[in-house]
Length: 489
Ligand code: ADQ
Image (tube, rainbow, N blue to C red):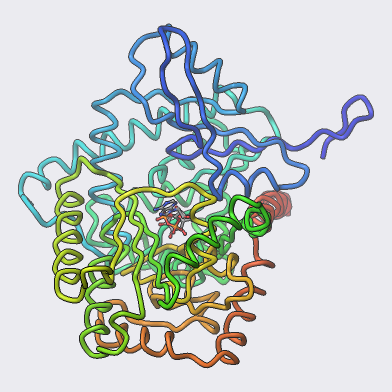
């Protein structure tokens, strides 16, 4: 920390992400109602010691007029947020197009867009141009607010050009970039038409972080194989300049969950749910309704389990909570109908006049309702086809007190690397294997459940979101100092 007038000054941290952690609703020409979303990232950054964090990002609304923009900027300033204004066209091309239609599926091994391939290929270039333009707009805002000594932390696949643009403004800026999704094998990344430009732009950062060592390794391989650069144990070297590449597995704010479980209203809700499902084991899935989460595969595995284990049919219930996302994208609409169709079929097949085996909700639950659900769950099913980390698995573990429920976890979620020893790991594509694991989990003896839970609980409560953010920021500071020493030598 620097000192000014005898007082310690906190280091400023500019957190740049596509979305600000707020929802903004316009109330009048110059007034806005704002609500901060208390997600994991927000609490992670609030917990970082000796740092004064500000957010820079898009507020998720189109504000075409200057009066509205000025009013929103002022309202956001009170929440320590700074807006980047994106118009509808750029959101369509950059966010819906290049981010969600190209990078998101590719990074999760779903390949480049398949349907209407010709049309999509023709629009690749315009979406990519919009992506760069949007990144430049984020860089402009960062640059306007940057003060010497600030740390700039860029987040996720939406902002892969940001490190390059920021360093072009000021090569002394301390810039870190962290990816929340997997980074795929270099063989997948190399199919992307703009593969080299994206890698080079990320390499402009001082520190590049991933959830797992595997993703970091894939990134370094992509840089060596596609760009011909040198990979070292520290990162990637280009003409004497080193970009540090490392794994920083994210965690959750486990105390927030513990505190919630102590609230009388949450305890009451837990009692209600316990009575509601008395005599049945509760299985739970909580996901955004996204292709990568493997929801249809999970439900089909549950069907197979019921098919093969008739005695369990009236003794188990699957609660699947799926928040709709990207609802304007046809592929996501198709996924929703597919899930509804499968759930309807299974409930028709195995339901009785008084009970159905699957309760499927297409909506988000509030934090306290979610905690209560996690607490009454006997078996959580996380069957992502690919997932950067998957925080639901952590949240479930944090909320299991005496119950010591079992986590069935996809081996393709980053969380498999940290919770693998306590969870039952499955290949989500192998429905027979997942069905068998459901059976194993439901029948698991108490001492084995206890042992597995103890392992996971220790991990979740000691590798928190605050630790993650603190480690990244301190590593970024160290990396810059080391680079300065190397330059002087
Ligand atoms: P997501 O893909 O959004 O995050 P995840 O890590 O599981 O996935 O986080 C989802 C969050 O949303 C959790 O906090 C969960 O509680 C909440 N949530 C999900 N469904 C909900 C529902 N129905 N109601 C209420 N809340 C719900 C991306 C990457 C992940 C990575 C995170 C963090 O895809 O792999 O773990 O970023 O880096």
